[in-house]
Image (cartoon, rainbow, N blue to C red; front, side, top):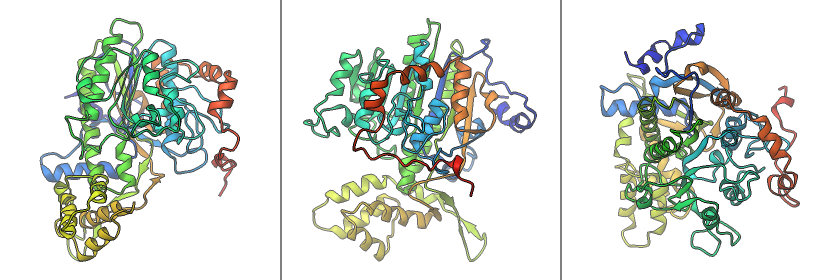
Length: 500
């Protein structure tokens, strides 16, 4: 029986009796490395969506790679809402505290909190961030930056490279999107409002900086930063492999490079890997984009477990859990005849693009034959016979931000699924684990407990990091906290004060 099968078979016994199941045959008492994988916006229904689709394409496949890794669940509320956002949730995972929605590495009083990545760096571990969003987005930012508002990505970029971080560079490798926040405003595609060239600054701080597939495919010496797109990286369904690496490719490159850099040292590494765009497709109510991001996440999980098994000389533990659910996805409709209830995953097989890509292409269209163009648009999305109303609605919203939702709703109605919201929900998220000592975290947990488990397994201490950050009073006042005239985050809404 395989290790994964043993873990699955003993799951309920372990849950109720407190026994442990073997995660690996490593002889060391503690892991040297910790891999944290966050599938942003990934809820239980999203897992079923992908599993049923895979089963429909091959009836012999009845489970996903992650199904054998399930060890529990995580509760996700923030300090000011029962429905968290990515910033407050990632801060819970990195700092071990509840904070307000929008907070990046700060507490309810806008004071910085030490993160597991910073603590690992301080103790000699190598560190990494690998995402498919902008590298300055909420989840990766919360592991290394400190600012009261997640939207201040210009500030976050400079902290991530160590230019305005009190401790200097904290991350040994970064890969993802978001180059627009690292180039000055006079360059095409910049998101900055100033003339700062953060790519140049990063080079001056010792980073090798690259932005194309050719450089990715070459061996890079730590520290390095690879930013492959101006904004978020492409959805997996839209990705061009010759231009952008997949999340799996980035993750394995990062693990190999961190392993090579630490195999002869006392300390190992800590890395955050985020399947960022599961969440974005949930916000867009886009089942096709959502599906292929989830399938890519499953592939990452499969390959990471294989990597752990292949590197038993450097014991590694992996935890994976979402920051929250996104979209309020439900699967199934009522029928007027048997089998009474139904959803039809086969329609997803005909989808070849995300609504983001299709809407962007249509907005640029200015040729003749628009009716045929719109029919083909629907066809590429998997809707082969759009109704007259659906065609008219798309044409009416050609340049409107809601065009994507019109396309998505057409496919959702044929699938027999529904999204309850274009935002997040309060649903608990699944917890997965593998490697040295993961079985010690079986059960249902608050999101703040994740950071505690990381610190326990790697022997970290967050308190002195927090103390040192807070001691940088000018930095806290001028960069971390709201400035005069800034719109302050809502205060007084902490859930601890609510009794209804």
